[in-house]
Length: 77
Image (tube, rainbow, N blue to C red):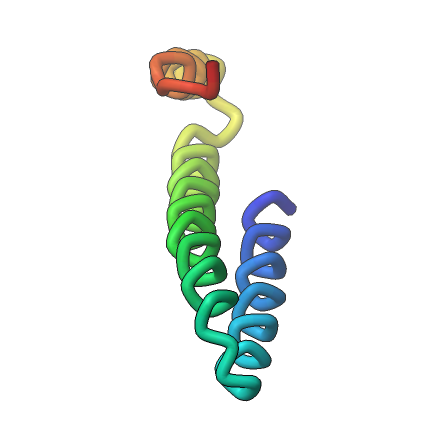
């Protein structure tokens, strides 16, 4: 569900960006480009985590390793 949500957000941002292009609203295009770049990263992260979950399956050891790996990621302070 998280991955699908990220894809939905990407689609919504793309629609807003298309409207900014149509209106020739360059400042909004610049701002939206930043958001789109960030959103691509969010979608990539969600996709990678989904693949790791699929590989771990119902394995307790696999889930422990996944939890450990994700726990090492830097977060917002």
